[in-house]
Length: 316
Picture 1 (tube, rainbow, N blue to C red):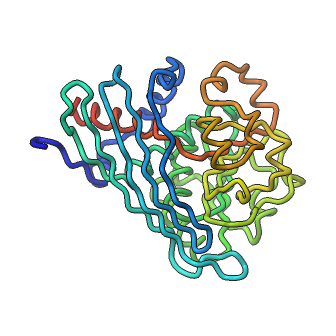
Picture 2 (picture 1 turned 180 degrees about the vertical axis):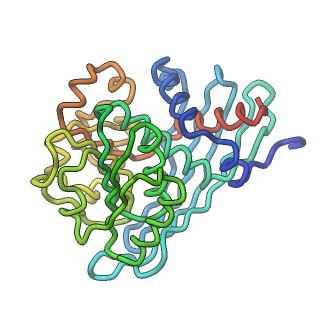
């Protein structure tokens, strides 16, 4: 246990480059590295209202020489009748332990919430880059928590975003969220709030959702542009999702791992494509249809993110 590094959020914030992490993800999936990685099913206990999750997930790859385990608690607030949170936001506490498969020694303990943030930003950028035309520039964000913020960072890393439309049923939160966006987006980006979800998503190139809603927030696709890309990263079960099942059924679904998606988010994911297949498709085939990244999370992404952080800090 001697000589391991403790990596907190301040170290990650000061050193991580989202663009570099996106490249690491692309290279890892292009090399089909996940197929040579052992990633057991996550252990989790999920409740819906108030939302809570107790999660443990691991991944090991001997080529990288790493074994990681993330342990996390996710606690939401009870929602009122309108679906809005009755209090501030979802609280995430997590740690990631990183061991060497060569020596067996503990190499690092990483702030799990901070690692999850950069991972989510990078995977959002990775998928958005593959599924949207280079000129895509309008973004809608539903939700105003940390995950929503990281999704904006991910999209901004791969596209020249010109407009961002924010929706939250709590308008105060939406306005406070805009202050966060102004702290890192280009000053020329136009940021505004929407009064409702149809207004938020109408004719947007890219939509990001990050809520703990127990019922679909987007129930009609009549306001979508025909080739919209959606990053759906919020709460999910086989029965509930931020986007109505009817919309998912009429879209090209993209998932981290098909088997995991079916188990955690329902059988309608049986025809979804995984990242490896996404990278082999003709870009125009992706650009010219509605694509939805239906995320359930996967520890392989935490493994690649941990590997990047340790290399960036010269620990590996």
